[in-house]
Amino acid sequence: MGVERLFSVVSRIKGVYGYIVVDGNGAFMAGDVDAPERLLKTISACGRRLVTLGHENFKYVLFSRKNKGSILIFPARGFFLGVVTQTHARDSETATAVMAFLRVVEGKPR
Image (tube, rainbow, N blue to C red; front, side, top):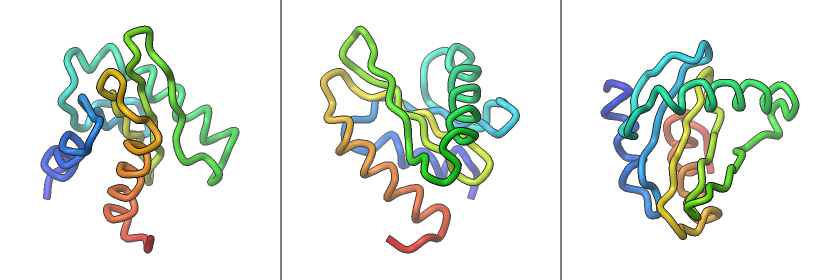
């Protein structure tokens, strides 16, 4: 199954507006956000720094936006998943659902 098809599930999670998958080198792998090039560097740079600081303790990071939406960044086996939330979404619920999806993708138990 291709990366695009696998991660298209993320778009159907409650509270998700769009997503972008970036490899460890900051290259675009998949996504459905408008103008993904605007988010590539941010997601890659933030993800790498946070993994360096938090090692395996880093589950995700949340950046609040002026429009009342958020960007969530998740590490997952050599890549980063950036999720743009809908305005006024419940970020903790969205993050929990995305982490459950990533556990399935990585083959980890709940």
